[in-house]
Image (tube, rainbow, N blue to C red):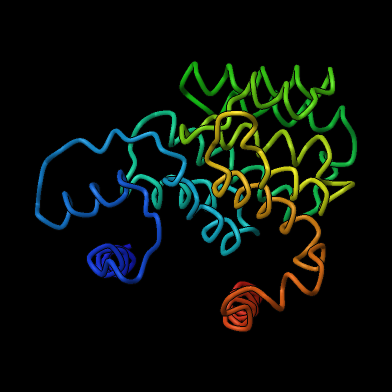
Length: 239
């Protein structure tokens, strides 16, 4: 974790290396690097994005993956809702990676959300899970989901909406769902890059990156490098 923070610090201090960084992440890195005792009670969704790496690395050990997700998030974001977001994101990622049978039916998805209520501590996270259950049962439209769940930078909005997209349509219609996610700005803008990232990671964990058209993969900046990293991660976790 120390080595990870050193890399994070190098990234933060080299402004030419990042685009549109989360200000709360930068503030946390600067505070820790300077020895500040400031509380890192941030609740931006960017705090949980790195969970995908720990979940992929520890996907065979559910408890280790859960604790790793909380640790890597708590490095810069330590609010209850962000830690709950890490738990939710990690749990659903593991189910997706392992093609768990809970994702095969609406009943299984509802039970999965119900079980997650015992794992989170904040009332806001529990309420978000209840809202997701209602949305699945009633089949919310995209607009209704955005209005009800939210699509902003707050962790439980972006994560909640992404989770709804994945559970409602992503297992059956992966590319169409991904396109819907990255176009979730509605009438007033939104954190569509995080929503696209989270939704895409869940869909990719379930289907593999092949759900994307080949031209999008070919046109991705440094695509060969990312595929090489993914292959290396797979080799490490399976040896």
